[in-house]
Length: 215
Image (cartoon, rainbow, N blue to C red; front, side):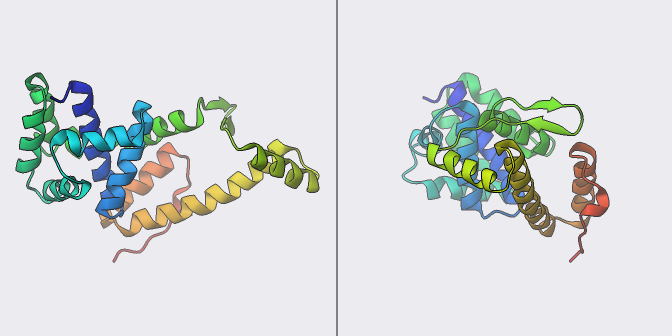
């Protein structure tokens, strides 16, 4: 029998899958990415979350669960709800009903800001703002990589911190622009406007820094 925590993990996977799928990922990739992110959020192994979405639901393989997700995203949640309820503790059924209950429930909500904040906090540790222009991020790298960073930064006459800051900024700007362009291509006109407004408000990105053309 599935306990509350396992059911909540499954529902979290579904919520994040919906967001990634809406952003343009294939359903399989959206599922895999969501499982990995939920594993990070709960500080457990990938297999633990994947197991809850497959074996503990009595399914033979991942594709069976993905097919149920596909049905749900296309308006038919009957089989998915029935399967989760069948294996779950009855005390958790109200949580399941709330998730699948309607167009304005948690099933359809994907808060980009909060989701990114959770993943960043788990992956990079504490993010501490320094004034209004910078922040300190901490992460671990292999010893060999660290040595190469020291060599490269020294060859430019810069400190490790200065060199990393410049390299990270360059890479992130390139990757982030690609992400924005890919996301916008998979949105309707009204969604694009709301997304750009969100970026300008929450990430301090000038609105004229992103352009798009409606299909």
